Image (cartoon, rainbow, N blue to C red; front, side, top):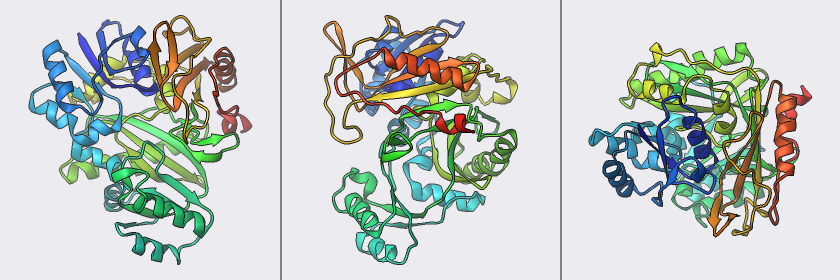
Length: 424
């Protein structure tokens, strides 16, 4: 069986790594992939948003199944295009992916489904947004409406910061088309939690709860990033809270998408803020999270390929999805200066000889490339170092042991991934 994974980040490396463990021993390809993925799959230089190129490759190579990692091809309608040609593909349609591609659309559907979320108002004119801002309480959240690689959110504690965020989005276009429309949103004071779920449009199978670390600095300080690390399971996600999220968030959203004629099939990502024990939705994503995938998939006991095919074939209710006991911690190593300007092409030293990893530590490549005999940096988030253990403490120790072996010029990482859970 030939499988193509679309994407080139740490999430996609984790997907390829997990698919490589399938007892069905699939032949793996990745477009465009990276230096780490290349040890497990044939990397083909086709960009993730090149719909025509991807389709031609799948048909020409006789690919049996395509698994989409990032959000951009989903928002462009890759699933619709492939289905029209009767090509098997894992992910939601373009209309269903609007849950992530348009925050305004997502808010509208949440309102219809009576899902708790922060109060928000959408604007497509900067002057109107700035006028509304003048009467809004602080702190306030400014969000680019479209896809901004996890960086289009600004929590402003002053009106000056909020004004600058609106001008950056709508006038300076720092997020391109994604910032043409903005949401001004109520600030929720609580603790974040991620619960992802496999769904075939009817049956929903939640994954263990995880927690991402968005801020670049220790103690959750500094700018928002695409994610500096994650851990799973997050103790905040108690059995009671998970049950509440299932009945008050996941099921209502899947039902609402079916009602409006855009059934959701793939992975639904619920980014939550838990306020005094009550879950509010910060955002929905239409795919697996990064770096949450890197800590959730290693705990999946059932063959990942079996789960994917059950979702595609609308028979998820017939599959018992099981999870390993234990915990996972992933520490992201970034280029110096990220999420701002950063250097690329720095040689990475200390990488393990194999990316398949041991029972306790794995290195997932995110922004890397091969240059002659060296692996070099090729992005802001460079590596995700995974630690596994029977407890979060052990998993964290294994992750930082792995980090200590790796170096490249200007590298940066947070030293407190999983600190909230361990403090509990």
